[in-house]
Structure formats: C-alpha cells, structure tokens
Image 1: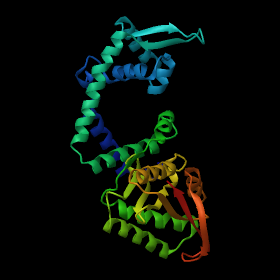
Image 2: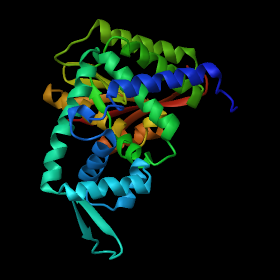
Image 3: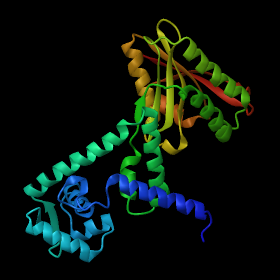
Length: 316
C-alpha cells in the first residue's frame, strides 16, 4: 500500500466522494431535471464551450470510452443537437459543433448548474466561500495537477483579485513579512517589530480619505499586500509591499504599486515616497518602471546581515 494511504484516509476520501456525487445528483437518470444524463450534459457542454472539435478531443477531455461517446454523438446527431463537418486543415478529421437546437438545449442546463452552485454558496459566509474554493483548488492541484486538467489550471493561474483588508489580514501581513524575509534574506526579529509597528500605526490612525490598504487574493488565499499612508499633507508613503513566492511573475507587485499611485493622485498628493533595500531587486524594478527615482541610501545592520537601505520618490 503506498505511503500515506491509510485505511482511515481511504474511508474519508470515499465518504467525500459519495456525499459529493449525491449532492450533485450524479446518479439521477435526468441530470438537473433535464432530458439528459450527466454524461450527455457534459458532452454537450464540452462541445458548446470548447468550440468546434473532434470526437477524439471530447473523449480525451472527458476521459470517455470511445464506444460510449460514439453512441451518444450518434444520438445527438439524430436529434439535431450537433453538426459534423470535415476539417479544412485535415480532411481525415470531423469537426463537431452545437447546432442551434443544441445551443438552446445547453442554455437551461447551464442556468440550472449555476443556480445549484449559487444556492450551495449562498448558505456560506464570505470567508467560508473563500475556504471552500481554496479547498477545491487544492484538491485539483494535488490529484490532477499533472493530468489533462493542466491547461485549464494554467489558464486560471494568473487570475487574482484585489480587495480591502479584512479582520485577520493585518496579522497575516506581519507574519508573512517576518517569515519571508527571514527565509530569503536572514533578517532577524527586529524587522518583525518594524512591520508590526507599521501595521499598528496604520490600523490605529487610519484615515479613510487619504490612506488605503490592499490584499491580493488568489483561489481564496492571500498572495500579496501593500499600504499607502499619509506621510505629510502633500506626500504619501508606500509601506509593506509583498507578493508570495508562488504568485510572483503574475504582475501583482506592479498592480499593487499602480493602485497606490492612482489612489494618491485622486486624493491630491503631490509626491509618493518609499523605503526599500538594495537586495530587494524585484521591488526596485517595479518602482523604477513606475517612475520612482532613488534619492538617497545608507548602510545598516539593524536586522542581522548588513544591508543598504534606499529612499525613492515619485513626483505626481
């Protein structure tokens, strides 16, 4: 038996599978109260939302037996739900597409599925919905990350949202700064104290008219953050820009910086200033691209290894 596949875990996975299939009505003869089984509905969806494709493409995407799929496609053709056409690129291939009747048949299926999921989510709070989506994404990544779903996962990987901080986010900001900088640059405890003080000042003295914080969220998990605070009447300051390693390369850092700049301009600031360090090359690159200029630097070793701190300004 493979490592980790204990009897208790097998029982738990099978219990989840039974509950999930029952909740979705997978075993019902008429899926979502329609005239189609789940298999037929999935094939219609694949053809309709995947564009014109071959039977081989559909079978591969859904992992269906060739004979089973052929019988369903013949039935669909007799009912006028699909069209078949010889591929212009390869005369040996037959391209499939939904007919007008097939497209109309798919509409109520889509609506019913949306309604079912919407009703399921409506019973959960916003944090619970985020946890649910994150758990589902984790299941996909762990079980099928190397399988046929990789293309779809790759398409989704770059999607993230920005939102205002919620309760618990400020503790996360301090924690992740301390953990990441300790791991990547060997910065010690005093740095965590600096982060905690910055967060405490932001929370305790928050001015909603002239200050703002953002959290970048992906698949229900925090992957980035930044704050813009009032430094003086005409100057704003960027604080605590961070992007999780797994989300780097998606443009999140640049997007968070752009949000700070847009907000500062709307609120009438004339300058944005920030404090960073020469070893933070990715952040420095973001600031340079946004138009910031290095105005001064100095060395210190307040957090362990010697570093060069830098002050950058952007005239608005």
